[in-house]
Length: 487
Ligand SMILES: [Ca+2]
Ligand SMILES: [Ca+2]
Ligand SMILES: [Ca+2]
Ligand SMILES: [Ca+2]
Image (cartoon, rainbow, N blue to C red; front, side, top):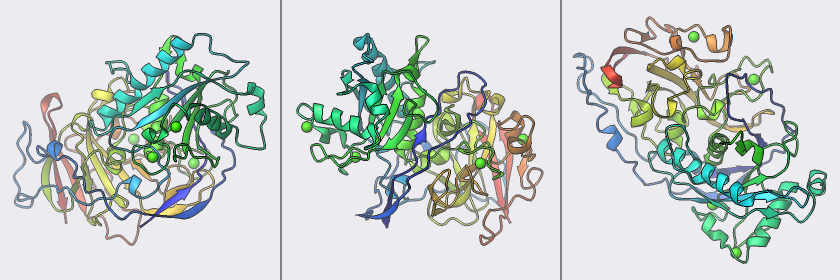
Protein backbone atom coordinates (compact mmCIF):
# COMPACT_ATOMS: atom_id res chain seq x y z
CA UNK A 1 0.00 0.00 0.00
CA UNK A 2 1.28 3.42 -0.91
CA UNK A 3 1.23 6.09 1.68
CA UNK A 4 -0.35 9.41 0.86
CA UNK A 5 1.59 12.61 1.31
CA UNK A 6 0.26 16.06 0.85
CA UNK A 7 0.73 19.63 1.92
CA UNK A 8 -2.39 20.20 3.86
CA UNK A 9 -4.33 23.29 4.68
CA UNK A 10 -3.09 25.13 7.73
CA UNK A 11 -5.18 24.16 10.68
CA UNK A 12 -6.12 27.22 12.64
CA UNK A 13 -6.16 26.49 16.27
CA UNK A 14 -9.36 26.15 18.20
CA UNK A 15 -8.85 27.78 21.53
CA UNK A 16 -10.05 26.31 24.74
CA UNK A 17 -13.60 27.02 25.68
CA UNK A 18 -13.60 29.07 28.86
CA UNK A 19 -17.35 29.24 29.05
CA UNK A 20 -20.35 28.46 26.92
CA UNK A 21 -19.20 30.34 23.88
CA UNK A 22 -20.39 29.53 20.43
CA UNK A 23 -18.38 28.05 17.65
CA UNK A 24 -15.94 30.41 16.03
CA UNK A 25 -16.68 31.44 12.50
CA UNK A 26 -13.74 30.18 10.57
CA UNK A 27 -12.18 31.46 7.42
CA UNK A 28 -9.09 29.85 6.08
CA UNK A 29 -6.58 30.83 3.46
CA UNK A 30 -6.56 29.16 0.10
CA UNK A 31 -5.07 25.78 0.41
CA UNK A 32 -2.04 24.76 -1.54
CA UNK A 33 -2.98 21.21 -1.89
CA UNK A 34 -0.84 18.74 -3.64
CA UNK A 35 -1.11 15.04 -3.73
CA UNK A 36 1.65 12.69 -4.53
CA UNK A 37 2.32 9.11 -4.05
CA UNK A 38 5.34 8.47 -1.99
CA UNK A 39 7.72 5.71 -2.72
CA UNK A 40 7.46 4.78 0.88
CA UNK A 41 5.59 1.56 1.11
CA UNK A 42 3.83 0.27 4.12
CA UNK A 43 4.83 -3.31 3.95
CA UNK A 44 4.37 -4.33 7.50
CA UNK A 45 1.29 -3.96 9.49
CA UNK A 46 2.23 -3.37 13.06
CA UNK A 47 2.56 -6.76 14.57
CA UNK A 48 2.14 -5.36 18.02
CA UNK A 49 -0.90 -6.89 19.51
CA UNK A 50 -2.54 -4.37 21.71
CA UNK A 51 -2.81 -5.53 25.24
CA UNK A 52 -5.98 -7.43 25.78
CA UNK A 53 -6.24 -6.83 29.47
CA UNK A 54 -8.94 -4.23 29.11
CA UNK A 55 -11.00 -6.60 27.08
CA UNK A 56 -10.87 -9.57 29.33
CA UNK A 57 -13.76 -8.39 31.37
CA UNK A 58 -15.82 -7.44 28.39
CA UNK A 59 -17.77 -10.62 28.29
CA UNK A 60 -18.17 -10.80 32.01
CA UNK A 61 -20.88 -8.66 33.48
CA UNK A 62 -19.60 -6.87 36.51
CA UNK A 63 -22.62 -6.93 38.72
CA UNK A 64 -25.73 -7.40 36.67
CA UNK A 65 -26.78 -10.67 35.20
CA UNK A 66 -27.13 -10.98 31.50
CA UNK A 67 -30.44 -11.85 29.98
CA UNK A 68 -30.42 -15.46 28.92
CA UNK A 69 -31.41 -15.96 25.37
CA UNK A 70 -31.21 -18.93 23.11
CA UNK A 71 -30.59 -16.53 20.28
CA UNK A 72 -27.45 -15.10 21.78
CA UNK A 73 -25.85 -18.36 22.90
CA UNK A 74 -22.34 -17.73 24.12
CA UNK A 75 -21.24 -15.43 21.36
CA UNK A 76 -18.85 -12.68 22.38
CA UNK A 77 -17.27 -9.72 20.62
CA UNK A 78 -13.98 -10.50 18.93
CA UNK A 79 -10.80 -8.46 18.70
CA UNK A 80 -9.58 -8.29 15.10
CA UNK A 81 -5.90 -8.75 14.37
CA UNK A 82 -3.59 -7.20 11.79
CA UNK A 83 -5.46 -3.91 11.76
CA UNK A 84 -4.05 -0.93 9.91
CA UNK A 85 -3.87 2.25 11.95
CA UNK A 86 -4.02 5.79 10.66
CA UNK A 87 -0.25 6.24 10.66
CA UNK A 88 0.10 3.18 8.44
CA UNK A 89 -1.88 4.98 5.75
CA UNK A 90 -0.14 8.32 5.39
CA UNK A 91 3.16 9.90 6.32
CA UNK A 92 2.08 13.43 7.11
CA UNK A 93 1.26 12.64 10.71
CA UNK A 94 4.52 13.51 12.35
CA UNK A 95 4.27 12.38 15.98
CA UNK A 96 4.26 8.60 16.45
CA UNK A 97 1.07 7.54 18.21
CA UNK A 98 2.81 5.08 20.51
CA UNK A 99 6.10 5.05 22.39
CA UNK A 100 8.19 7.85 23.85
CA UNK A 101 8.68 10.56 21.21
CA UNK A 102 10.34 13.85 22.09
CA UNK A 103 9.20 17.09 20.50
CA UNK A 104 11.03 20.42 20.30
CA UNK A 105 9.40 23.31 22.14
CA UNK A 106 10.91 26.70 21.41
CA UNK A 107 9.93 30.02 23.00
CA UNK A 108 10.53 32.48 20.16
CA UNK A 109 11.30 36.16 20.81
CA UNK A 110 12.17 39.03 18.50
CA UNK A 111 14.69 41.85 18.97
CA UNK A 112 11.67 44.15 19.39
CA UNK A 113 9.68 41.68 21.52
CA UNK A 114 11.95 40.09 24.10
CA UNK A 115 10.54 37.86 26.82
CA UNK A 116 10.71 39.89 30.02
CA UNK A 117 11.07 36.89 32.30
CA UNK A 118 12.62 34.08 30.35
CA UNK A 119 12.86 31.65 33.26
CA UNK A 120 9.17 31.87 34.16
CA UNK A 121 8.18 31.63 30.50
CA UNK A 122 10.23 28.49 30.17
CA UNK A 123 8.84 27.07 33.40
CA UNK A 124 5.23 27.76 32.41
CA UNK A 125 5.67 26.21 28.99
CA UNK A 126 7.37 23.24 30.58
CA UNK A 127 4.40 22.80 32.90
CA UNK A 128 2.00 22.94 29.94
CA UNK A 129 3.92 20.16 28.20
CA UNK A 130 5.32 17.99 30.95
CA UNK A 131 3.61 18.91 34.23
CA UNK A 132 1.99 16.34 36.48
CA UNK A 133 -1.72 15.83 36.01
CA UNK A 134 -4.08 16.88 38.79
CA UNK A 135 -7.84 16.79 39.21
CA UNK A 136 -8.06 20.16 37.49
CA UNK A 137 -5.08 20.24 35.14
CA UNK A 138 -3.58 17.97 32.53
CA UNK A 139 -0.37 18.69 30.71
CA UNK A 140 0.15 17.49 27.17
CA UNK A 141 2.18 14.61 28.59
CA UNK A 142 -0.21 13.59 31.35
CA UNK A 143 -3.26 13.85 29.11
CA UNK A 144 -1.81 11.62 26.43
CA UNK A 145 -0.44 9.09 28.88
CA UNK A 146 -3.89 8.64 30.36
CA UNK A 147 -5.83 8.94 27.11
CA UNK A 148 -3.63 6.34 25.39
CA UNK A 149 -3.66 3.95 28.36
CA UNK A 150 0.08 4.55 28.72
CA UNK A 151 0.88 3.73 25.12
CA UNK A 152 2.03 7.27 24.32
CA UNK A 153 4.45 9.25 26.50
CA UNK A 154 5.32 12.53 24.73
CA UNK A 155 8.13 14.59 26.19
CA UNK A 156 8.33 18.28 25.33
CA UNK A 157 11.96 19.41 25.37
CA UNK A 158 11.66 23.12 26.16
CA UNK A 159 14.62 25.17 24.96
CA UNK A 160 15.72 28.58 26.18
CA UNK A 161 14.01 31.46 24.38
CA UNK A 162 15.35 31.79 20.86
CA UNK A 163 15.81 35.32 19.52
CA UNK A 164 15.23 35.74 15.79
CA UNK A 165 17.72 37.44 13.55
CA UNK A 166 15.34 40.20 12.47
CA UNK A 167 12.62 42.33 13.97
CA UNK A 168 9.11 40.94 14.08
CA UNK A 169 7.90 43.06 11.16
CA UNK A 170 10.45 41.41 8.89
CA UNK A 171 8.73 38.04 9.23
CA UNK A 172 5.27 39.53 9.20
CA UNK A 173 5.95 41.14 5.82
CA UNK A 174 8.10 38.42 4.30
CA UNK A 175 6.69 37.24 1.00
CA UNK A 176 9.68 35.67 -0.73
CA UNK A 177 9.62 32.67 1.61
CA UNK A 178 7.36 31.10 4.20
CA UNK A 179 8.25 33.11 7.33
CA UNK A 180 7.56 30.25 9.75
CA UNK A 181 9.89 27.99 7.80
CA UNK A 182 12.55 30.72 7.83
CA UNK A 183 12.32 30.87 11.62
CA UNK A 184 12.47 27.09 11.86
CA UNK A 185 15.69 27.18 9.82
CA UNK A 186 17.13 29.84 12.13
CA UNK A 187 16.33 27.72 15.17
CA UNK A 188 17.62 24.47 13.72
CA UNK A 189 20.82 26.09 12.44
CA UNK A 190 21.49 27.74 15.78
CA UNK A 191 21.07 24.53 17.77
CA UNK A 192 22.57 22.14 15.25
CA UNK A 193 25.96 22.19 16.95
CA UNK A 194 24.57 21.25 20.33
CA UNK A 195 21.48 19.16 19.56
CA UNK A 196 21.38 15.83 17.79
CA UNK A 197 18.07 16.20 16.00
CA UNK A 198 17.92 12.50 15.25
CA UNK A 199 16.85 12.17 18.87
CA UNK A 200 13.68 13.98 17.83
CA UNK A 201 12.82 11.39 15.18
CA UNK A 202 11.51 8.60 17.37
CA UNK A 203 10.06 6.62 14.49
CA UNK A 204 13.22 7.02 12.37
CA UNK A 205 11.38 8.17 9.28
CA UNK A 206 13.74 11.06 8.61
CA UNK A 207 11.17 13.66 9.68
CA UNK A 208 11.30 15.72 12.83
CA UNK A 209 8.45 14.43 14.96
CA UNK A 210 7.24 17.88 15.95
CA UNK A 211 8.29 21.44 16.70
CA UNK A 212 6.21 23.91 18.70
CA UNK A 213 7.11 27.61 18.49
CA UNK A 214 5.58 29.82 21.17
CA UNK A 215 6.19 33.40 20.18
CA UNK A 216 6.30 36.64 22.14
CA UNK A 217 4.15 39.02 20.12
CA UNK A 218 0.55 40.16 20.56
CA UNK A 219 -1.95 37.91 18.84
CA UNK A 220 -3.43 39.42 15.71
CA UNK A 221 -6.54 38.69 13.72
CA UNK A 222 -7.84 35.22 13.06
CA UNK A 223 -5.86 33.64 10.22
CA UNK A 224 -3.20 36.37 10.26
CA UNK A 225 0.51 35.67 10.69
CA UNK A 226 0.14 36.53 14.39
CA UNK A 227 -2.43 33.86 15.02
CA UNK A 228 -1.99 30.26 16.02
CA UNK A 229 -1.85 27.46 13.52
CA UNK A 230 -0.54 24.08 12.60
CA UNK A 231 1.17 23.78 9.27
CA UNK A 232 4.04 22.16 7.48
CA UNK A 233 7.63 23.22 6.82
CA UNK A 234 8.27 24.54 3.33
CA UNK A 235 12.05 24.71 3.48
CA UNK A 236 14.44 22.22 1.96
CA UNK A 237 17.00 21.81 4.72
CA UNK A 238 17.82 18.81 6.82
CA UNK A 239 19.65 18.82 10.13
CA UNK A 240 21.48 15.71 11.27
CA UNK A 241 19.67 14.11 8.34
CA UNK A 242 16.31 15.09 9.79
CA UNK A 243 13.83 17.24 7.90
CA UNK A 244 11.34 19.42 9.76
CA UNK A 245 7.69 18.80 8.94
CA UNK A 246 4.65 19.65 11.08
CA UNK A 247 4.96 22.70 13.27
CA UNK A 248 2.76 24.63 15.64
CA UNK A 249 3.01 28.42 15.87
CA UNK A 250 1.21 30.00 18.79
CA UNK A 251 1.45 33.23 20.82
CA UNK A 252 2.50 32.89 24.43
CA UNK A 253 -0.65 34.72 25.48
CA UNK A 254 -2.65 31.68 24.35
CA UNK A 255 -0.54 29.46 26.60
CA UNK A 256 -0.50 31.63 29.70
CA UNK A 257 -3.09 34.21 30.63
CA UNK A 258 -4.78 35.29 33.84
CA UNK A 259 -2.13 33.31 35.71
CA UNK A 260 -3.48 30.18 34.08
CA UNK A 261 -1.50 27.71 32.01
CA UNK A 262 -3.45 26.34 29.04
CA UNK A 263 -2.36 23.02 27.60
CA UNK A 264 -5.70 22.13 26.04
CA UNK A 265 -4.96 23.80 22.74
CA UNK A 266 -1.67 21.89 22.53
CA UNK A 267 -3.57 18.70 23.30
CA UNK A 268 -6.04 19.34 20.47
CA UNK A 269 -3.36 20.31 17.96
CA UNK A 270 -1.20 17.37 18.92
CA UNK A 271 -4.23 15.25 18.03
CA UNK A 272 -3.73 16.49 14.46
CA UNK A 273 -0.03 15.69 14.57
CA UNK A 274 -0.99 12.16 15.62
CA UNK A 275 -3.41 11.70 12.73
CA UNK A 276 -6.83 12.93 13.84
CA UNK A 277 -9.08 15.34 11.96
CA UNK A 278 -11.22 18.13 13.27
CA UNK A 279 -14.67 16.85 14.11
CA UNK A 280 -16.31 20.27 14.27
CA UNK A 281 -17.64 21.76 11.06
CA UNK A 282 -14.76 23.75 9.60
CA UNK A 283 -17.12 25.75 7.37
CA UNK A 284 -20.37 26.39 9.17
CA UNK A 285 -23.13 27.95 7.16
CA UNK A 286 -21.84 26.68 3.84
CA UNK A 287 -25.20 25.15 3.09
CA UNK A 288 -23.92 21.64 3.21
CA UNK A 289 -26.46 20.57 5.81
CA UNK A 290 -23.49 19.25 7.69
CA UNK A 291 -23.04 21.64 10.56
CA UNK A 292 -22.11 21.21 14.21
CA UNK A 293 -19.87 18.15 13.91
CA UNK A 294 -19.88 16.28 17.20
CA UNK A 295 -21.67 19.07 19.01
CA UNK A 296 -18.59 20.07 20.95
CA UNK A 297 -18.40 16.71 22.67
CA UNK A 298 -14.92 15.62 21.67
CA UNK A 299 -11.29 16.65 22.13
CA UNK A 300 -11.12 17.13 18.35
CA UNK A 301 -14.33 19.11 18.33
CA UNK A 302 -14.33 21.68 21.08
CA UNK A 303 -11.22 20.67 23.02
CA UNK A 304 -13.44 19.05 25.60
CA UNK A 305 -13.13 15.78 27.48
CA UNK A 306 -11.24 13.02 25.73
CA UNK A 307 -10.71 11.48 22.32
CA UNK A 308 -13.62 9.29 21.22
CA UNK A 309 -13.29 5.52 20.83
CA UNK A 310 -12.89 5.62 17.06
CA UNK A 311 -9.99 8.06 17.38
CA UNK A 312 -8.35 5.75 19.90
CA UNK A 313 -8.92 2.75 17.64
CA UNK A 314 -7.20 4.31 14.62
CA UNK A 315 -4.29 5.43 16.82
CA UNK A 316 -3.85 1.87 18.09
CA UNK A 317 -4.64 2.73 21.69
CA UNK A 318 -7.67 0.50 22.19
CA UNK A 319 -8.78 -2.73 20.62
CA UNK A 320 -12.16 -2.63 18.93
CA UNK A 321 -14.61 -5.27 20.12
CA UNK A 322 -16.42 -6.34 16.98
CA UNK A 323 -20.03 -7.47 17.12
CA UNK A 324 -21.38 -8.99 13.92
CA UNK A 325 -23.63 -11.69 15.25
CA UNK A 326 -26.35 -11.81 17.86
CA UNK A 327 -25.13 -11.69 21.43
CA UNK A 328 -25.48 -10.18 24.84
CA UNK A 329 -22.52 -8.31 26.17
CA UNK A 330 -21.49 -5.64 28.65
CA UNK A 331 -19.51 -2.47 28.50
CA UNK A 332 -17.58 -0.87 31.32
CA UNK A 333 -17.19 2.91 31.36
CA UNK A 334 -15.28 3.88 28.22
CA UNK A 335 -13.31 6.64 29.88
CA UNK A 336 -11.59 4.26 32.29
CA UNK A 337 -11.71 0.91 30.47
CA UNK A 338 -11.26 1.92 26.82
CA UNK A 339 -13.97 -0.56 25.90
CA UNK A 340 -15.98 0.18 22.78
CA UNK A 341 -17.90 -1.96 20.34
CA UNK A 342 -17.87 -1.89 16.57
CA UNK A 343 -21.29 -3.10 15.45
CA UNK A 344 -21.89 -4.03 11.84
CA UNK A 345 -23.45 -6.74 9.71
CA UNK A 346 -20.53 -6.46 7.28
CA UNK A 347 -17.12 -6.47 8.95
CA UNK A 348 -14.43 -6.06 6.29
CA UNK A 349 -11.40 -6.38 8.55
CA UNK A 350 -10.54 -2.68 8.49
CA UNK A 351 -11.18 0.33 10.66
CA UNK A 352 -11.45 2.45 7.51
CA UNK A 353 -15.00 1.50 6.70
CA UNK A 354 -18.60 2.26 7.68
CA UNK A 355 -19.93 0.88 10.97
CA UNK A 356 -21.41 1.88 14.32
CA UNK A 357 -19.37 2.40 17.48
CA UNK A 358 -20.94 2.00 20.90
CA UNK A 359 -19.55 3.07 24.24
CA UNK A 360 -20.71 3.53 27.82
CA UNK A 361 -20.44 7.23 28.59
CA UNK A 362 -20.06 8.28 32.22
CA UNK A 363 -19.35 11.82 33.50
CA UNK A 364 -16.09 10.65 35.06
CA UNK A 365 -12.36 10.84 34.37
CA UNK A 366 -11.56 13.31 31.61
CA UNK A 367 -15.28 13.82 31.04
CA UNK A 368 -15.60 15.34 34.51
CA UNK A 369 -16.50 19.01 34.34
CA UNK A 370 -17.60 18.85 30.71
CA UNK A 371 -21.29 18.16 31.20
CA UNK A 372 -22.18 21.24 29.16
CA UNK A 373 -20.75 19.55 26.11
CA UNK A 374 -21.28 15.92 27.01
CA UNK A 375 -24.97 15.14 27.29
CA UNK A 376 -25.62 17.21 30.43
CA UNK A 377 -23.65 14.53 32.25
CA UNK A 378 -26.29 11.87 31.53
CA UNK A 379 -24.57 8.45 31.64
CA UNK A 380 -25.63 5.72 29.24
CA UNK A 381 -25.04 4.20 25.85
CA UNK A 382 -23.63 6.55 23.23
CA UNK A 383 -23.74 5.53 19.58
CA UNK A 384 -21.51 6.88 16.83
CA UNK A 385 -21.94 6.37 13.11
CA UNK A 386 -18.48 6.17 11.54
CA UNK A 387 -18.05 6.33 7.78
CA UNK A 388 -14.29 6.28 7.38
CA UNK A 389 -14.07 4.89 3.90
CA UNK A 390 -10.77 5.91 2.30
CA UNK A 391 -10.72 8.01 -0.82
CA UNK A 392 -9.00 11.31 -1.38
CA UNK A 393 -11.51 14.12 -0.93
CA UNK A 394 -10.18 17.37 -2.35
CA UNK A 395 -12.62 19.45 -0.37
CA UNK A 396 -11.98 23.15 -0.61
CA UNK A 397 -12.68 23.57 3.07
CA UNK A 398 -11.30 20.38 4.53
CA UNK A 399 -9.23 18.15 2.27
CA UNK A 400 -8.98 14.68 3.66
CA UNK A 401 -7.92 11.16 2.84
CA UNK A 402 -11.43 9.98 3.67
CA UNK A 403 -14.49 10.06 1.44
CA UNK A 404 -16.23 12.05 4.17
CA UNK A 405 -15.33 14.86 6.51
CA UNK A 406 -17.32 16.65 9.18
CA UNK A 407 -17.33 19.91 7.21
CA UNK A 408 -18.82 19.77 3.76
CA UNK A 409 -19.73 16.26 2.69
CA UNK A 410 -23.26 14.93 2.76
CA UNK A 411 -22.29 12.10 5.07
CA UNK A 412 -20.02 12.61 8.01
CA UNK A 413 -16.75 11.00 8.93
CA UNK A 414 -18.14 10.53 12.44
CA UNK A 415 -21.44 11.61 13.94
CA UNK A 416 -23.60 10.85 16.93
CA UNK A 417 -26.83 8.91 16.54
CA UNK A 418 -29.09 10.75 18.96
CA UNK A 419 -31.16 8.44 21.14
CA UNK A 420 -34.21 10.66 20.82
CA UNK A 421 -33.87 10.56 17.05
CA UNK A 422 -34.93 14.18 16.61
CA UNK A 423 -31.63 15.36 15.10
CA UNK A 424 -31.55 18.25 17.54
CA UNK A 425 -27.79 18.64 17.10
CA UNK A 426 -28.47 19.87 13.58
CA UNK A 427 -32.05 21.07 13.67
CA UNK A 428 -32.77 21.86 17.30
CA UNK A 429 -33.10 25.14 19.07
CA UNK A 430 -30.48 25.83 20.10
CA UNK A 431 -28.70 23.66 17.60
CA UNK A 432 -25.12 22.61 17.91
CA UNK A 433 -24.95 20.71 21.17
CA UNK A 434 -25.61 17.29 22.61
CA UNK A 435 -28.22 16.80 25.31
CA UNK A 436 -29.18 14.21 27.90
CA UNK A 437 -31.95 12.91 25.64
CA UNK A 438 -29.32 11.97 23.06
CA UNK A 439 -27.97 9.19 25.32
CA UNK A 440 -29.62 5.75 25.25
CA UNK A 441 -31.08 4.55 28.54
CA UNK A 442 -32.34 1.11 29.66
CA UNK A 443 -35.37 0.17 27.61
CA UNK A 444 -34.20 2.13 24.60
CA UNK A 445 -33.76 -0.12 21.58
CA UNK A 446 -31.87 1.21 18.59
CA UNK A 447 -33.88 0.50 15.40
CA UNK A 448 -36.96 -0.54 17.34
CA UNK A 449 -38.30 2.15 19.63
CA UNK A 450 -35.45 4.54 18.77
CA UNK A 451 -34.28 5.50 15.26
CA UNK A 452 -36.47 2.73 13.85
CA UNK A 453 -35.48 3.15 10.21
CA UNK A 454 -31.82 3.98 10.63
CA UNK A 455 -29.72 2.88 7.65
CA UNK A 456 -26.16 2.77 6.34
CA UNK A 457 -24.94 5.60 4.15
CA UNK A 458 -23.93 3.15 1.44
CA UNK A 459 -26.81 1.72 -0.53
CA UNK A 460 -24.49 -1.00 -1.73
CA UNK A 461 -23.89 -2.28 1.78
CA UNK A 462 -26.16 -5.09 3.00
CA UNK A 463 -29.05 -3.37 4.75
CA UNK A 464 -28.69 -2.74 8.46
CA UNK A 465 -30.40 -5.68 10.10
CA UNK A 466 -29.77 -5.45 13.82
CA UNK A 467 -31.19 -3.87 16.93
CA UNK A 468 -29.23 -2.77 19.99
CA UNK A 469 -31.22 -3.27 23.17
CA UNK A 470 -29.93 -1.38 26.19
CA UNK A 471 -31.06 -3.90 28.81
CA UNK A 472 -29.79 -2.56 32.10
CA UNK A 473 -27.21 -0.45 33.88
CA UNK A 474 -25.43 -1.54 37.05
CA UNK A 475 -25.24 0.87 39.97
CA UNK A 476 -22.32 3.24 40.42
CA UNK A 477 -21.27 3.06 36.77
CA UNK A 478 -20.59 -0.65 37.17
CA UNK A 479 -21.36 -1.40 33.52
CA UNK A 480 -24.19 -1.68 31.04
CA UNK A 481 -25.78 -4.78 29.59
CA UNK A 482 -26.65 -4.84 25.92
CA UNK A 483 -28.39 -7.35 23.73
CA UNK A 484 -27.60 -7.04 20.04
CA UNK A 485 -29.88 -9.03 17.78
CA UNK A 486 -29.30 -9.63 14.07
CA UNK A 487 -32.21 -10.77 11.94
CA1 LIG B 1 23.06 18.52 15.35
CA1 LIG C 1 9.81 11.17 12.65
CA1 LIG D 1 -20.41 22.88 6.68
CA1 LIG E 1 -31.75 15.06 20.27
